[in-house]
Figure (cartoon, one colour):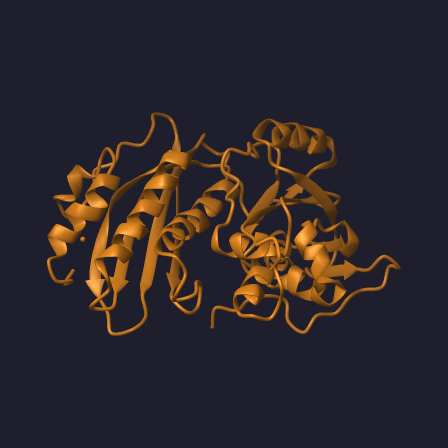
Length: 317
């Protein structure tokens, strides 16, 4: 872990307590990790930049938790069990000590919750905004990882949780929408990765929804070479999202920051999915089907008309 003043003492104070087996106490240049016997590793990485993926004044503990959770959501989409993570922190010079303390406290809270620990990483200073990156490592039984490809015609489309809260939460924090309960802002700042939902052997394809339901479903359609039909009124919305009104439906369907799972499930395995969801205490909702045809997403209103959207979802560039 680069070139911040008193870098090694900062690591010792804030990050060494987060280190787990294989991290060597963060006293070396690399971790040594022994994967569980007979398991395959799953690796994923996501970056977060202040002003892009979180607001510069967001509480430091929630920034840490969101950074970990968005990566855990990718592991959940593979049906993987969390194992450990690597992290880089590029902070502007003069970042207060209490920011690092809060950031580490948030990570510690979610490490305990999700059974994962820090393996190593890097710290540097930057003239730009606070930039964070985390690589999460998980494991699955050989050959059971769920992919974006592999869906088949007539598979049903399911999502976990509710869709649209994260995008509406950003609108709340930007002053564009009221949020009397605080639910929407909390959902933007603190995703709920569906770790523990046993989708291996049930979902023929899947991914997490980070860039908008319509856009991410389009990725799944292209990977599986299928067309999707979605009923807009079947997409689960929270009470707070419904209270925002119909003018915000497009934001809910395309805005992103949901970090819920989108799954293609054969009809014969839908009962198995609902049983697994009940066991994990994760709500699931059937929103449509996949069919043979040109890869595209059709979202229909209650009358059957195809809805059109200004954009499909979030673009990273």
